[in-house]
Image (cartoon, rainbow, N blue to C red; front, side, top):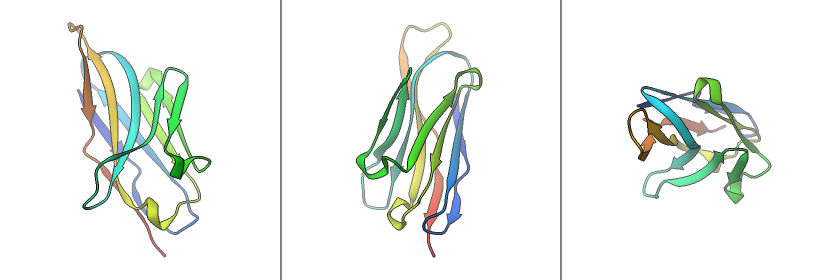
Length: 119
């Protein structure tokens, strides 16, 4: 199973970016998907997650970021609006996936995509 992110880049404060993550491989089902972010010297932290019809957001992004998914494409998206300098980080896609032939649910990570908010 692979998670491949796209959509990162450089944006000015107040701008918007949309991150995408597509899961591929021998996928039987995806229980949950989410986005985390990490800055140098800090631990990776949850930004937003989606499980079924429920979503969960870090307090710092509520009202600005929106997570959504496309079940048919095994994809998750993060629409980021009103970006702030402090949103600068490497953003990682994360998913709990059950693969074909297994009863186990395994946690997978993408390779990360850089988001830089700068004037």
